[in-house]
Amino acid sequence: MGRAHGSAPPGPADAPGLHHLLSELAGAFGDFGTIVPLILAAAVVCNLPLAPILIFFGAWFVLTGLIYRLPIPVEPMKAVAAVAIAGSLGGGEIAAAGLVLGVIFLLISSEEWMNGISRFIPESVLRGIQLALALLLLRTAAGFLAGDAVTFAFAVAVILAGLVIAAKARVPDLSALAVIAIGLAMGIYLHGIPGLQLAGIPPLVIPTWADLSSALADMVVPQAILTVTNAILATSLLTRDLFRSEVPPARLSRTIGVMNLVSVPFGGFPMCHGAGGLAGQYRFGARTGLASIFAGIIFLSIGLFWASREVLTLIPAGIFGALLFYTSLELGRYSLKRESWFVAVVMGVIALASSMTVAFAAGLALAYGMAWWMGKARSSIHNGPS
Image (cartoon, rainbow, N blue to C red; front, side):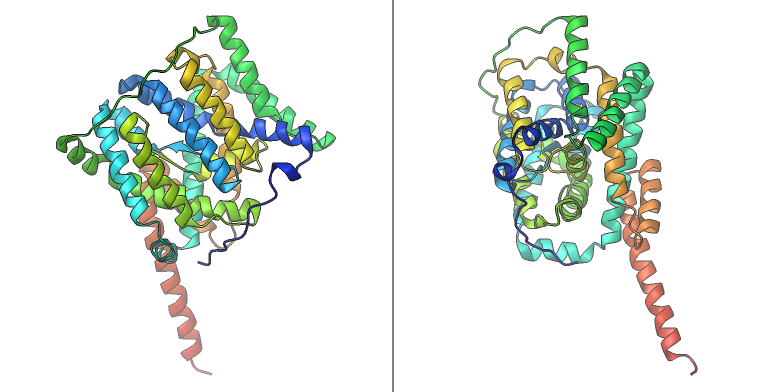
Protein backbone atom coordinates (compact mmCIF):
# COMPACT_ATOMS: atom_id res chain seq x y z
CA MET A 1 0.00 0.00 0.00
CA GLY A 2 1.59 3.24 -1.14
CA ARG A 3 2.13 6.09 1.29
CA ALA A 4 2.26 9.68 0.12
CA HIS A 5 4.16 12.19 2.20
CA GLY A 6 2.31 15.25 0.96
CA SER A 7 2.40 18.54 2.71
CA ALA A 8 -0.32 19.69 5.06
CA PRO A 9 -3.18 21.84 3.77
CA PRO A 10 -3.06 25.60 4.23
CA GLY A 11 -2.83 26.68 7.85
CA PRO A 12 -4.95 29.13 9.79
CA ALA A 13 -3.34 32.17 8.22
CA ASP A 14 -4.83 31.17 4.86
CA ALA A 15 -8.34 30.69 6.21
CA PRO A 16 -11.23 33.19 6.19
CA GLY A 17 -10.86 34.89 9.58
CA LEU A 18 -13.66 34.61 12.12
CA HIS A 19 -15.50 31.83 10.27
CA HIS A 20 -12.35 29.74 10.35
CA LEU A 21 -11.76 30.35 14.07
CA LEU A 22 -15.35 29.44 14.96
CA SER A 23 -15.26 26.32 12.79
CA GLU A 24 -11.99 25.15 14.35
CA LEU A 25 -13.31 25.87 17.85
CA ALA A 26 -16.45 23.82 17.13
CA GLY A 27 -14.34 21.01 15.71
CA ALA A 28 -12.21 20.98 18.85
CA PHE A 29 -15.18 19.43 20.70
CA GLY A 30 -15.73 16.70 18.11
CA ASP A 31 -13.91 13.97 20.05
CA PHE A 32 -14.94 14.98 23.57
CA GLY A 33 -17.71 12.37 23.55
CA THR A 34 -15.04 9.65 23.42
CA ILE A 35 -12.33 11.24 25.55
CA VAL A 36 -14.22 12.65 28.54
CA PRO A 37 -16.28 9.57 29.51
CA LEU A 38 -13.18 7.32 29.37
CA ILE A 39 -11.04 9.76 31.34
CA LEU A 40 -13.70 10.23 33.99
CA ALA A 41 -14.49 6.52 34.32
CA ALA A 42 -10.80 5.60 34.64
CA ALA A 43 -10.15 8.35 37.20
CA VAL A 44 -13.12 7.37 39.35
CA VAL A 45 -12.91 3.56 39.16
CA CYS A 46 -9.11 3.27 39.28
CA ASN A 47 -8.69 6.12 41.81
CA LEU A 48 -6.35 8.13 39.57
CA PRO A 49 -5.59 11.84 40.09
CA LEU A 50 -7.48 13.74 37.40
CA ALA A 51 -5.27 16.83 37.09
CA PRO A 52 -2.16 15.22 35.49
CA ILE A 53 -4.34 13.20 33.11
CA LEU A 54 -6.02 16.37 31.81
CA ILE A 55 -2.80 18.41 31.77
CA PHE A 56 -0.92 15.88 29.65
CA PHE A 57 -3.88 15.48 27.28
CA GLY A 58 -3.94 19.25 26.88
CA ALA A 59 -0.20 19.55 26.33
CA TRP A 60 -0.14 16.83 23.69
CA PHE A 61 -3.19 18.18 21.90
CA VAL A 62 -1.39 21.51 21.54
CA LEU A 63 1.85 19.85 20.40
CA THR A 64 0.17 17.59 17.82
CA GLY A 65 -1.69 20.61 16.44
CA LEU A 66 1.62 22.42 16.00
CA ILE A 67 3.48 19.37 14.65
CA TYR A 68 0.94 18.08 12.12
CA ARG A 69 -1.05 21.26 11.32
CA LEU A 70 -4.05 18.92 10.99
CA PRO A 71 -6.73 17.99 13.58
CA ILE A 72 -4.94 14.81 14.65
CA PRO A 73 -6.62 13.81 17.94
CA VAL A 74 -5.12 12.59 21.19
CA GLU A 75 -7.22 9.89 22.84
CA PRO A 76 -7.04 7.50 25.80
CA MET A 77 -5.87 4.03 24.77
CA LYS A 78 -9.24 2.29 24.63
CA ALA A 79 -8.18 -1.30 25.33
CA VAL A 80 -6.08 -0.17 28.30
CA ALA A 81 -8.99 1.94 29.58
CA ALA A 82 -11.54 -0.86 29.13
CA VAL A 83 -9.43 -3.47 30.96
CA ALA A 84 -8.42 -1.02 33.70
CA ILE A 85 -12.01 0.07 34.33
CA ALA A 86 -13.39 -3.49 34.23
CA GLY A 87 -10.74 -4.72 36.69
CA SER A 88 -10.46 -1.56 38.83
CA LEU A 89 -6.71 -1.66 38.23
CA GLY A 90 -4.25 0.61 39.99
CA GLY A 91 -2.03 3.34 38.64
CA GLY A 92 1.03 1.07 38.60
CA GLU A 93 -0.48 -1.46 36.19
CA ILE A 94 -1.81 1.30 33.93
CA ALA A 95 1.58 3.03 33.92
CA ALA A 96 3.34 -0.24 33.12
CA ALA A 97 1.11 -0.78 30.08
CA GLY A 98 1.69 2.78 28.88
CA LEU A 99 5.47 2.57 29.25
CA VAL A 100 5.74 -0.78 27.45
CA LEU A 101 3.51 0.45 24.63
CA GLY A 102 5.51 3.67 24.42
CA VAL A 103 8.72 1.69 23.94
CA ILE A 104 7.09 -0.57 21.34
CA PHE A 105 5.77 2.29 19.19
CA LEU A 106 8.99 4.24 19.41
CA LEU A 107 10.96 1.17 18.30
CA ILE A 108 8.71 0.45 15.28
CA SER A 109 8.46 4.08 14.21
CA SER A 110 11.04 3.75 11.44
CA GLU A 111 9.86 3.95 7.83
CA GLU A 112 11.06 0.38 7.21
CA TRP A 113 9.02 -1.10 10.05
CA MET A 114 5.85 0.84 9.35
CA ASN A 115 6.03 0.32 5.58
CA GLY A 116 6.42 -3.41 6.21
CA ILE A 117 3.41 -3.46 8.54
CA SER A 118 1.42 -1.38 6.01
CA ARG A 119 2.15 -3.88 3.25
CA PHE A 120 1.13 -6.79 5.47
CA ILE A 121 -2.28 -5.33 6.39
CA PRO A 122 -4.55 -4.87 3.33
CA GLU A 123 -6.53 -1.66 2.94
CA SER A 124 -9.78 -3.63 3.16
CA VAL A 125 -8.81 -4.63 6.74
CA LEU A 126 -8.12 -1.00 7.65
CA ARG A 127 -11.56 -0.07 6.27
CA GLY A 128 -12.95 -2.88 8.42
CA ILE A 129 -11.26 -1.39 11.48
CA GLN A 130 -12.90 1.95 10.66
CA LEU A 131 -16.35 0.36 10.34
CA ALA A 132 -15.87 -1.77 13.46
CA LEU A 133 -14.91 1.31 15.45
CA ALA A 134 -17.88 3.23 14.01
CA LEU A 135 -20.27 0.49 15.12
CA LEU A 136 -18.70 0.31 18.59
CA LEU A 137 -19.05 4.10 18.93
CA LEU A 138 -22.67 3.80 17.78
CA ARG A 139 -23.31 1.18 20.46
CA THR A 140 -21.75 3.46 23.07
CA ALA A 141 -23.95 6.31 21.85
CA ALA A 142 -26.97 4.05 22.28
CA GLY A 143 -25.95 3.57 25.92
CA PHE A 144 -25.98 7.33 26.44
CA LEU A 145 -29.37 7.46 24.71
CA ALA A 146 -30.80 4.89 27.15
CA GLY A 147 -29.61 6.88 30.15
CA ASP A 148 -30.55 10.38 28.97
CA ALA A 149 -32.97 10.10 26.04
CA VAL A 150 -34.46 13.60 26.21
CA THR A 151 -31.12 15.41 26.19
CA PHE A 152 -29.81 13.03 23.51
CA ALA A 153 -32.78 13.76 21.24
CA PHE A 154 -32.48 17.51 21.84
CA ALA A 155 -28.74 17.49 21.07
CA VAL A 156 -29.30 15.45 17.88
CA ALA A 157 -31.92 18.02 16.80
CA VAL A 158 -29.45 20.86 17.42
CA ILE A 159 -26.79 19.08 15.36
CA LEU A 160 -29.26 18.45 12.52
CA ALA A 161 -30.26 22.12 12.61
CA GLY A 162 -26.58 23.06 12.47
CA LEU A 163 -26.13 20.87 9.40
CA VAL A 164 -29.05 22.48 7.61
CA ILE A 165 -28.08 26.04 8.54
CA ALA A 166 -24.46 25.48 7.53
CA ALA A 167 -25.53 24.06 4.15
CA LYS A 168 -28.14 26.73 3.39
CA ALA A 169 -26.30 29.79 4.64
CA ARG A 170 -22.79 28.55 3.79
CA VAL A 171 -21.51 29.26 7.29
CA PRO A 172 -19.43 27.03 9.63
CA ASP A 173 -21.28 24.21 11.37
CA LEU A 174 -21.19 25.27 15.02
CA SER A 175 -23.52 22.55 16.29
CA ALA A 176 -20.87 20.84 18.45
CA LEU A 177 -20.01 24.15 20.07
CA ALA A 178 -23.72 24.86 20.60
CA VAL A 179 -24.55 21.52 22.26
CA ILE A 180 -21.50 21.69 24.56
CA ALA A 181 -22.46 25.24 25.58
CA ILE A 182 -26.07 24.14 26.21
CA GLY A 183 -24.86 21.13 28.20
CA LEU A 184 -22.60 23.30 30.38
CA ALA A 185 -25.42 25.78 30.96
CA MET A 186 -27.73 22.94 32.01
CA GLY A 187 -25.11 21.52 34.38
CA ILE A 188 -24.37 24.88 36.00
CA TYR A 189 -28.09 25.56 36.39
CA LEU A 190 -28.66 22.20 38.08
CA HIS A 191 -25.46 21.89 40.13
CA GLY A 192 -23.93 25.36 40.36
CA ILE A 193 -20.47 26.56 39.35
CA PRO A 194 -17.74 24.18 40.58
CA GLY A 195 -15.10 25.62 42.85
CA LEU A 196 -11.51 26.41 41.87
CA GLN A 197 -9.06 23.53 42.39
CA LEU A 198 -5.43 24.20 41.54
CA ALA A 199 -3.28 21.34 40.26
CA GLY A 200 -0.42 20.20 42.46
CA ILE A 201 2.90 18.56 41.58
CA PRO A 202 2.19 15.43 39.49
CA PRO A 203 2.91 12.14 41.27
CA LEU A 204 5.77 9.94 40.10
CA VAL A 205 4.38 6.51 39.15
CA ILE A 206 6.94 3.68 39.22
CA PRO A 207 5.48 0.29 38.19
CA THR A 208 6.60 -2.89 39.96
CA TRP A 209 7.48 -6.18 38.25
CA ALA A 210 4.05 -7.48 39.29
CA ASP A 211 2.45 -4.46 37.56
CA LEU A 212 4.49 -5.17 34.44
CA SER A 213 3.48 -8.85 34.37
CA SER A 214 -0.20 -7.99 34.74
CA ALA A 215 -0.03 -5.29 32.05
CA LEU A 216 1.65 -7.56 29.51
CA ALA A 217 -0.93 -10.28 29.98
CA ASP A 218 -4.09 -8.17 29.96
CA MET A 219 -3.52 -4.84 28.22
CA VAL A 220 -0.42 -4.58 26.01
CA VAL A 221 -1.24 -7.12 23.28
CA PRO A 222 -4.84 -6.07 22.50
CA GLN A 223 -3.91 -2.38 22.73
CA ALA A 224 -0.87 -2.83 20.45
CA ILE A 225 -3.08 -4.38 17.75
CA LEU A 226 -5.72 -1.66 18.11
CA THR A 227 -3.11 1.11 18.07
CA VAL A 228 -1.33 -0.17 14.96
CA THR A 229 -4.56 -0.61 13.03
CA ASN A 230 -6.77 2.27 14.21
CA ALA A 231 -4.50 4.87 15.81
CA ILE A 232 -1.78 4.63 13.17
CA LEU A 233 -2.74 2.97 9.88
CA ALA A 234 -6.46 3.82 9.81
CA THR A 235 -5.76 7.39 10.97
CA SER A 236 -3.11 7.78 8.27
CA LEU A 237 -5.55 6.42 5.68
CA LEU A 238 -8.29 8.78 6.84
CA THR A 239 -6.00 11.81 6.52
CA ARG A 240 -5.66 10.85 2.85
CA ASP A 241 -9.45 10.54 2.51
CA LEU A 242 -10.16 13.87 4.20
CA PHE A 243 -7.21 16.07 3.24
CA ARG A 244 -5.63 14.31 0.22
CA SER A 245 -2.39 14.57 2.15
CA GLU A 246 -1.46 11.50 4.13
CA VAL A 247 0.34 11.72 7.46
CA PRO A 248 2.98 8.94 7.35
CA PRO A 249 2.30 6.08 9.78
CA ALA A 250 5.88 6.25 11.06
CA ARG A 251 5.31 9.82 12.33
CA LEU A 252 2.11 8.82 14.14
CA SER A 253 3.91 5.87 15.76
CA ARG A 254 6.72 8.14 16.86
CA THR A 255 4.49 10.68 18.58
CA ILE A 256 2.53 7.90 20.30
CA GLY A 257 5.77 6.44 21.64
CA VAL A 258 7.16 9.74 22.86
CA MET A 259 3.99 11.07 24.47
CA ASN A 260 3.53 7.89 26.53
CA LEU A 261 7.16 7.67 27.67
CA VAL A 262 7.11 11.34 28.70
CA SER A 263 3.64 11.48 30.30
CA VAL A 264 2.82 8.13 31.91
CA PRO A 265 5.51 8.19 34.65
CA PHE A 266 4.03 11.49 35.92
CA GLY A 267 0.39 10.44 36.12
CA GLY A 268 -0.64 10.77 32.49
CA PHE A 269 -3.01 8.16 31.09
CA PRO A 270 -1.74 6.03 28.14
CA MET A 271 -2.54 7.95 24.93
CA CYS A 272 -2.72 7.40 21.19
CA HIS A 273 -4.26 8.95 18.09
CA GLY A 274 -7.45 7.61 16.48
CA ALA A 275 -9.43 7.53 13.24
CA GLY A 276 -12.69 8.00 15.16
CA GLY A 277 -11.44 11.17 16.82
CA LEU A 278 -10.19 12.56 13.52
CA ALA A 279 -13.57 11.85 11.92
CA GLY A 280 -15.38 13.51 14.81
CA GLN A 281 -13.27 16.66 14.78
CA TYR A 282 -13.53 16.93 11.00
CA ARG A 283 -17.30 16.35 11.11
CA PHE A 284 -17.78 19.35 13.41
CA GLY A 285 -15.58 21.75 11.47
CA ALA A 286 -11.90 21.04 12.20
CA ARG A 287 -9.67 21.43 9.15
CA THR A 288 -6.30 22.43 10.65
CA GLY A 289 -4.20 21.93 13.74
CA LEU A 290 -5.86 24.96 15.33
CA ALA A 291 -8.76 22.72 16.46
CA SER A 292 -6.30 20.51 18.36
CA ILE A 293 -4.70 23.59 19.93
CA PHE A 294 -8.13 24.81 21.08
CA ALA A 295 -8.89 21.36 22.54
CA GLY A 296 -5.54 21.37 24.30
CA ILE A 297 -6.12 24.78 25.84
CA ILE A 298 -9.49 23.58 27.18
CA PHE A 299 -8.00 20.45 28.76
CA LEU A 300 -5.02 22.40 30.17
CA SER A 301 -7.31 25.04 31.69
CA ILE A 302 -9.50 22.44 33.39
CA GLY A 303 -6.51 20.38 34.52
CA LEU A 304 -4.65 23.35 36.00
CA PHE A 305 -7.56 25.13 37.68
CA TRP A 306 -10.70 22.94 37.85
CA ALA A 307 -9.49 19.35 37.99
CA SER A 308 -12.44 17.96 39.92
CA ARG A 309 -14.77 15.18 38.86
CA GLU A 310 -17.69 17.57 39.26
CA VAL A 311 -16.50 19.67 36.31
CA LEU A 312 -16.55 16.74 33.88
CA THR A 313 -19.92 15.54 35.10
CA LEU A 314 -21.56 18.94 34.55
CA ILE A 315 -22.35 18.09 30.91
CA PRO A 316 -25.31 15.65 30.64
CA ALA A 317 -24.55 12.21 29.21
CA GLY A 318 -26.98 12.73 26.33
CA ILE A 319 -24.75 15.50 24.93
CA PHE A 320 -21.80 13.10 24.64
CA GLY A 321 -24.09 10.46 23.13
CA ALA A 322 -25.18 12.83 20.36
CA LEU A 323 -21.58 13.77 19.55
CA LEU A 324 -20.62 10.09 19.42
CA PHE A 325 -23.62 9.31 17.21
CA TYR A 326 -22.54 11.73 14.50
CA THR A 327 -18.87 10.81 14.87
CA SER A 328 -19.76 7.16 14.20
CA LEU A 329 -21.67 8.11 11.04
CA GLU A 330 -18.78 10.24 9.79
CA LEU A 331 -16.26 7.45 10.36
CA GLY A 332 -18.51 4.73 8.98
CA ARG A 333 -19.14 6.43 5.65
CA TYR A 334 -15.45 6.30 4.76
CA SER A 335 -15.21 2.59 5.52
CA LEU A 336 -17.64 1.23 2.91
CA LYS A 337 -15.51 1.52 -0.21
CA ARG A 338 -16.60 -0.58 -3.18
CA GLU A 339 -13.53 -2.83 -3.17
CA SER A 340 -13.59 -3.53 0.58
CA TRP A 341 -17.17 -3.39 1.83
CA PHE A 342 -17.58 -7.16 2.31
CA VAL A 343 -14.48 -7.52 4.53
CA ALA A 344 -15.43 -4.34 6.39
CA VAL A 345 -18.98 -5.50 7.15
CA VAL A 346 -17.81 -8.92 8.37
CA MET A 347 -15.23 -7.28 10.64
CA GLY A 348 -17.82 -4.86 11.97
CA VAL A 349 -20.22 -7.63 12.91
CA ILE A 350 -17.46 -9.66 14.58
CA ALA A 351 -16.25 -6.62 16.54
CA LEU A 352 -19.74 -6.08 17.90
CA ALA A 353 -20.14 -9.75 18.80
CA SER A 354 -16.62 -10.33 20.15
CA SER A 355 -13.75 -7.84 20.10
CA MET A 356 -11.60 -5.69 17.81
CA THR A 357 -8.74 -8.19 18.17
CA VAL A 358 -10.86 -11.10 16.93
CA ALA A 359 -12.30 -8.91 14.15
CA PHE A 360 -8.79 -7.96 13.03
CA ALA A 361 -7.65 -11.59 12.87
CA ALA A 362 -10.81 -12.61 10.98
CA GLY A 363 -10.44 -9.70 8.57
CA LEU A 364 -6.84 -10.63 7.77
CA ALA A 365 -7.83 -14.26 7.13
CA LEU A 366 -10.76 -13.21 4.95
CA ALA A 367 -8.80 -10.63 2.94
CA TYR A 368 -5.92 -12.99 2.22
CA GLY A 369 -8.32 -15.88 1.55
CA MET A 370 -10.29 -13.82 -0.96
CA ALA A 371 -7.07 -12.66 -2.66
CA TRP A 372 -5.86 -16.28 -2.93
CA TRP A 373 -9.22 -17.49 -4.30
CA MET A 374 -9.42 -14.69 -6.89
CA GLY A 375 -5.83 -15.35 -7.96
CA LYS A 376 -6.57 -19.03 -8.35
CA ALA A 377 -9.72 -18.26 -10.35
CA ARG A 378 -7.82 -15.93 -12.69
CA SER A 379 -5.09 -18.54 -13.11
CA SER A 380 -7.69 -21.19 -13.92
CA ILE A 381 -9.29 -18.97 -16.58
CA HIS A 382 -5.91 -18.09 -18.06
CA ASN A 383 -4.75 -21.74 -18.23
CA GLY A 384 -8.13 -23.13 -19.37
CA PRO A 385 -8.99 -24.41 -22.83
CA SER A 386 -8.86 -21.81 -25.58
